[in-house]
Image 1 (cartoon, rainbow, N blue to C red):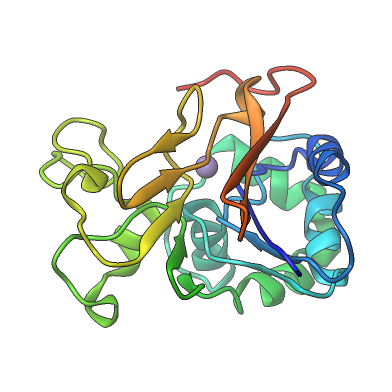
Image 2: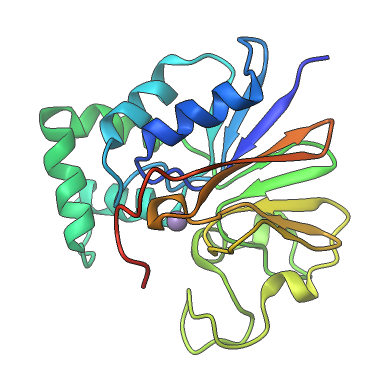
Amino acid sequence: MDRTIIVGDVHGCYFELTALLEEIGVRDEDRLVFVGDLITKGPANREVLEFIRQRRNCESVLGNHEYLLLQHYRGQQVALESAHRQTIAELGKDFEVFMNLVAKFPYYIDLGNYLVVHAGIRPGLPMEKQSVEDLTQLRTLNGPRPGSKAGIPWFERYRGEKTVIFGHWVFDSPLIQANAIGIDTGCVYGGQLTAFILPANRLVSVPAVKAYVKKG
Ligand SMILES: [Mn+2]
């Protein structure tokens, strides 16, 4: 049976992505779904985007870092950090090509019993009412600002019938909740790159070669 392999935040860690897919024994028929934040902070953003562009059976939802770069590309005023400037410089004259690719990323991907989103779902709201900010940045329901870790994590309250597979929030090991599975294990910070494999419900992680950036 063909598998669906959901991969956590890659952040330009192309070497670890290759190692993870090798560890899983990925086949052409396998569907790859990424939780977003493919790029920024890590060493090989171009290689990661090129991989996504060329592989068939391969999709990603939009992460907050792709969204920010896309807003910048579209001429909106956003606060770029040095990691974003570095990625723009690395992509060079192909920035436009890659932004056209990223512009096609959906905010979520429905896998039937599972829903893939970058950050989170605001409990009790139908998908069409979810905001882009929540889908790409949500951590807690009553935090002082989007992305804050203070307050009640959205996945403590979410009781939707679909299990949400998400990235964005870095955990030391994958977070397994009743209705949510967090698979950002902080590869770019020296943690691990993690995948969740369906229909086997199996988690596979590979260690980062090193910490490419400091967490925080
Ligand atoms: Mn991330």
